Structure formats: C-alpha cells, structure tokens
Image (cartoon, rainbow, N blue to C red; front, top):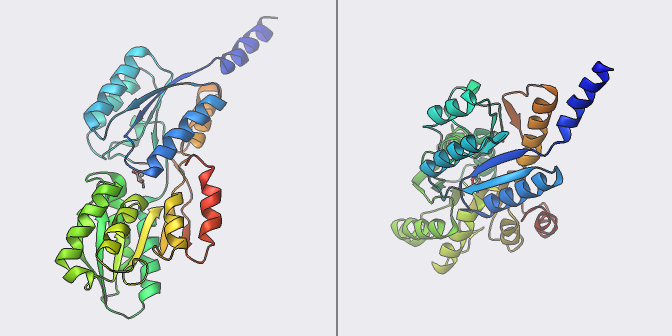
Length: 312
Ligand code: AHR
C-alpha cells in the first residue's frame, strides 16, 4: 500500500505545472522574434508557466532577471546569452539554489558544469557552409567580400566569422576586405553596407556580402539597390537563419544562399528539462539542431509559405 502511494505521489508530481523563467536577449531580428513566439507556444502546450524577461540586448538586464527568477524560486531557467563571457557568478548562484539552467541558441565561455545543457546549432559549421558555398559559386574569379558581423562578443558573431574564414581558406582569390558589426539588425545592416559601398568605389569593388544573419542581409540588399547595383548578381549575398523574408529576396533574385537555424530551441529544451526533472535523466551537454543550406534552386516561394506558419 505504502509503495503504491509513494509511486502515485511520484507520478502526480510530474503533472504539476512548472514555472520556468526565460531570459531572452531582445527582439533584434525576425529569427529572435520567432524563437520568442515558439517558446511561448511550447510552454503553453506543456502547461508551463513561463516568466518572460526581455533584456533589450543588455547582459546586466539578463543577470538581474536570472537573480529575480532565483529569488522567485522558479523550477528552471532558460537563458539565451547575449554575449559569451561574464556568466560564471550568476550561473553559480542558480546552481547553488538547485535551479537547472538551459542555454538557448547562443553559447557561453563558462565551464559546462554550471548549466544542465545547451540547445543550439553548430555556429562555426554554419560559417563554414556559407564560405564553402561562396567558393563553389565564384570558382577562380577574384572576389572581394564584405562581412556584416553579429553582436560583438556574441558566440554566433565569433564562430560564424571563424567558420567562414575556414570555409574560404586556401582560396586566395577570395578576400574579406571589410568587416564590421551590424548588431544583427536590419537598420544597422543597411547603414554599415552603405559605408562599405561608399568605401569600395560605390560597390564596384565588392563581389559578395557575407552577413551573420538574414536581417542584416535584407537591410544591406536595400542599400545595394539604392546604390544602383543588383544584389544577387552584381553583389552575391549569403547569410544565416532562413527567415521568410530572405526567401522572398531569393525568389526575386536578390539573395543567393542562407543557412537555416531553427527557431524552435524551446521544444528540445523543455523535453530535456522534463526528462531530467521527472525521471532524473541527465541530458548531453549539447543538444544540436540541424543547419541546412538553401539556395535559389530550392523553390524559395514554397519555403517562404512553409516558414510563415512556424513562429514567423
Ligand atoms: O543567436 C542566434 C542569432 O541571434 C541569430 O542568427 C540572429 O538572427 C539572432 O539575432
């Protein structure tokens, strides 16, 4: 009798609604907005009470939000870390309070025993894929590349840059001639591209743009058009995320390639947390999502329609 009662208590605890705090970076890109939407939807599906905190791109706001989640006694924390460094102290505080932390999409430099698991893509590999695509596209032709980097100090900016450099390594005809941050936003992508165009003979010296996300590419496409050049042919455009708008640009011949990043990081994160909290299953330290290359050959309008329903 007692053991039946004990197991009933055990199983019933699994269905009690959990409270999970989510420290989100902000809403710099279409991808980020979709990740927020899908996280809310996934929480609702599972009956999770999600406490959402928008950090407006500031690490100090994220640290404050995490401390407040700890003070409220949440069951777990999701953290999309804006930059890679500076997390040790607050992650230790969560650990000392026995609150598991799951990292979403971006990574940290802290020791991996300070968090339960990280859900994300291989950010370095995304850069390699973009670089290798360009190598295949230009062959032996001289090609000056301009690069729009993501948020300075963020793991995607660091790794996508290094990955791309690896992808083009050994092809001396391809050179990165300018590289600057566009903060992962459309507006800054456009503004920085305008300065690249001015500095490079109105754009005539530029063969390709590599943008660390699609939103910056979309802003830059506008700048290229305003400079009287054709994005997608006069200047090749390769970027990362696979948001719906880049497929519209591809269908119009104004963008060439994108590497997909799934915005549904929360699904695998909640699954891992449920397995850990209900059954004690310790997840691997990294739960990797897929990265897929799309080009103009992949029926961009069809992909656009499919993407529209998925959090975008
Ligand atoms: O961390 C993932 C990156 O953050 C996405 O590629 C970008 O769009 C977002 O802002």
